[in-house]
Image (cartoon, rainbow, N blue to C red; front, side, top):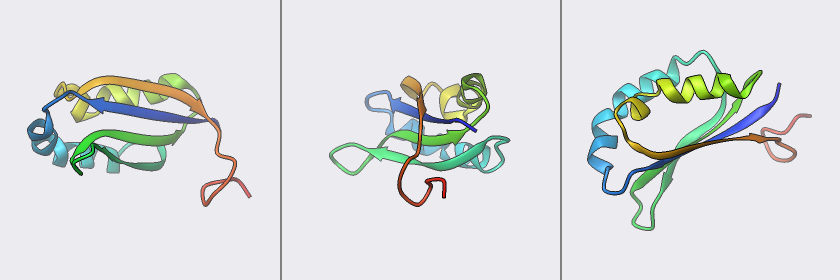
Length: 97
């Protein structure tokens, strides 16, 4: 199955919104009906969360877009922009054997 990177950049000065919405976001990710290979926050230079990064295996990019659109972070207006790109894992712990 193809892999995709989902890269979400938070709006400037939105840490309070991220923290307020975090429990809903984590619940959404834990119960998602999509194959999340890796997920976690990205950080600014001050060690504050500033976005989210996912590597997802999905049949098509529209599946990843639907997942991204339903994220409580997105629904709360946290993200400045969201980028989905095709990706291929070729080395490391997640690489095909």
